[in-house]
Structure formats: structure tokens, C-alpha cells
Amino acid sequence: TTPHNSLTMARVVNASLGWALRHARPRGLPSAGMQMMCTSASSPSSSSSLRGGDLAAMVAVPAITGAALLEAWLRTDLADAETSQQCHCAASDRLLGLAEVRRLQQDGFVVLPNAISTETLAAVRAELQLMTTEERHRFQGSGNDSDVRQDLVCWVRETDGTEAARSEEERRLKPLRPGLVACARLLRGLPRALEQEGYTSSSSHRVPRQLQLAWYAGDAASHYTRHLDACSGPVYELGLLGWLRASDYR
Image (tube, rainbow, N blue to C red; front, top):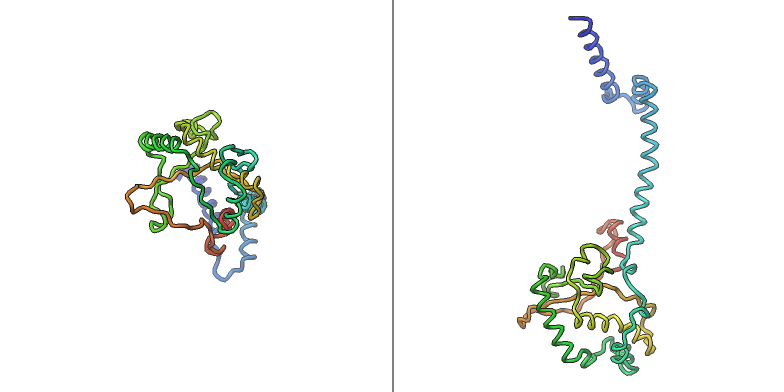
């Protein structure tokens, strides 16, 4: 062979031998001995680089893990809510009086007859007919078991289709029509109306900006079974991150 080929072959052999010494652990050789072999077979620069990489991993892994756990612990939908005072609605105040609040505290529920006028109800139904035709894709299954509810769900905000929407996707939606906006404001105004009449079963109310619009088939079979959306799974089933992120539902 030529001198050039001999030099190339020697480099290949040296490289192969160095790789073998670093990666092949001799049978019966303890970890400390293998570490000494790798150190002696490696150049000072590569050894320093390895220690630097280990140090970076020792710093980065706990930091990333801690950040993920902190994010999970802080995750909540309360950031997307307003105080009851911010949701004041005169129509809600007219619905609730002292007698209704006492009945709610005593029985756990209260029926409010004629909460929505006949005219508003007719307008809302017409608006929803248009919505289910023009934006049918927004209605999805609720995610509950089929024996609990059989409706389709659409999440709506008063800011949908406006410049005040949270994202470009929500700005591209069609704006809510007047009847549906009136219903949303009426519903979101109830916490303040309760507080105004001395309701004491709960306090410090936060009102979500997002509302759930449910569409039932109207086939005399679809129904809603009373239930609570809650997460009761233990941490060893959900995993630590999943358990922390479900804090709003525990």
C-alpha cells in the first residue's frame, strides 16, 4: 500500500480502538475501572467535554422538571373569568329576590319562571337555527358517557367574531347575535344578583367568560342526567402532572 493508504488505515484502527475502549465494558471489570480506561483512552478535551455535558444535564433536568410541575400546579381556568361585580346585569337583578335566594339555599335549586321573555326566546331559537346551519362544525360531542347526555356542545364567548376576541381563530368566528348575547349576560349576571340578596352558601364568585351552548336533538329521547364534572382519580392513576392539572375539578 502507499504511505497515504497506510496512514488512513492507521487512523481507522486507532479510531475503532478508541470507540471500543469507550463503549465495550470488559467482563468482570467494575464501573470504576471502566471509567479509568475511558478516561485514559480519551483525550483531555473530550473528557472535559463529557464532564461539562453531565453538569449541564444535572442542572437542566431538575430545572425543566420543576418548571413542568409548577406550570401544572398553576394551571387553572380562573384566569379566564371575571368577578361577579364585572358581570352586573339589570335583568338578572330583576329575576332574583330574597324569597328565591332563601329557596335556593334551603333546597339547593330554584325555578325562575319566565326568565326569558317569549320574544327573546323566539329570537334566540331563530339565531341558533342559523348558527347550527352556518357553523355546524363548532358543535361537538360533550365527552360525557352516552347515558349521561346526548347533546352536541358549542363553546361561545360574547367576544366571538370581534376584535376583542382572544385569538385569530376566535376573531374569524361569526359574532353572536343579539338574542344569544342577552341570554349570556343574563346568565353571567346571576352571581352578583345572588350576592346582592345575601346569598351565603358560597362566596368570592368568579364568572367564566366562556359559556357552554348545548344542542339537543329534540327527539323526545335525548336528555341530560344531573351530574358533577369532577376528577376523583388518584395521583398514581393520573400521574403527577395530570393530577396537578386537574385541580379545578378536584
